[in-house]
Image (cartoon, rainbow, N blue to C red; front, side, top):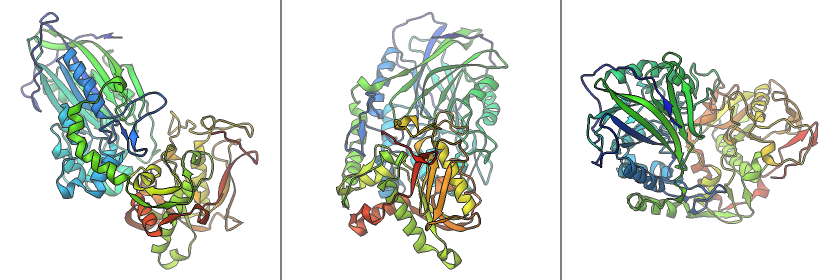
Length: 597
């Protein structure tokens, strides 16, 4: 439903930034002084140009009947544009990482070397986006790669809270103002879009952004820039924020600003009319927040992920003393599942899609047994044992000096519960299905006490129980925590190889790890280990204790997924019997817990 606004005069500005967008003429539908502006927003598309599951090699499907991809989103956008020509399309970030389509053009045939158009740029240019925020995953392939992608877009990427480390100048355009000529005639409307990104990239992609980019908090940056957007002539201010609504952080106190902070921005920064939120992958049709200084309502919407939903903001404007004021605003989520794919978007990405499908289906070896990833959330499994085996071997081979004599442990997370490897042919797609992120491998030195603390943090993933079950998996996993109030995601749960241990989930978090042993003997607090770990975790992702300050003994920038592919190609066969072991188990008061899956 809509929310009546208190209107107030705005200052007239002398200049505008950005290009002019003119809507097509249409029959008059309201009084000349009234205009309805519609803003459509996507977020966390993560490489889904088409409604296709590259891991299953077939059209995407889930139990909820969702579709994914920009092709069907485009059809919905065109429908709204026909309904209201005064419509602008924007994006909230995390576009160029997430599917093999993205990773192929970043690692196999990178656009920085070939000069080819990125498939997501091709799709979004076809759809007529007018602005986009920078997401944290935009930095995954480095600043130069992001720069090459950015140049291919027909619209600006915005991030007001990112500056050049050397000069202190904005590294991206902080905002852009688009001019809409009302379809029925009348005074043009100036719409300001301010971009903000979660500052966590300073941690998660530290090797790629350190000494090149600096990040500040979204609240602090909004306070600085919103008045400037207004002063530049914006009648309407919409914030594109790659940051969640409710305040939380997965990096603890490693940075002075929270990861997700949009409610505070809406409450504390006057002059904002609407916020497109993202990053947390939640569906929030409309969240209304009252600004503490003005008493006005700020409407926030978040459209989930992958193009499953589109946020729609309808802003009713009134012309008061020569200036437009937002008199009423509402938001909702549109579902593209029933829409046909836009043939123009399909055509724009067809070559890249076909190339990617061919690549991910190439056979690289064989497996002697099935290795599903789903059970890895609650039981020791061969899929994670395989990842840990390769990581352990890679780090162990490279260690020198005294470190070469230390035991090597390895940490891996169940990134994709739908992934896995089946007996028979192993393809690139199978490997990408169990390791979907483009992480690199490091080795760090930890003490026995730090290893136990690490496992205690990981064990927060489980909900506390009173008995041994049986329990459905969802009744035991993904526990809410201070860092993850909406439930701990699977990628923040690590299992360790090289040691044996029990996780007693009848006990409170922080006191769950029992019988922690190495080589059949209890681990002592001062015992020394090397832990093979991915760059996201080592840089602070998940706020695991001890890892960011631990000595780094291995860092050759080896991409973990590529090392898995290379291992299979060289070995020819994956035989879980050669490396899979029951290193850990869930217990309740010392007795095994039964999980029904």
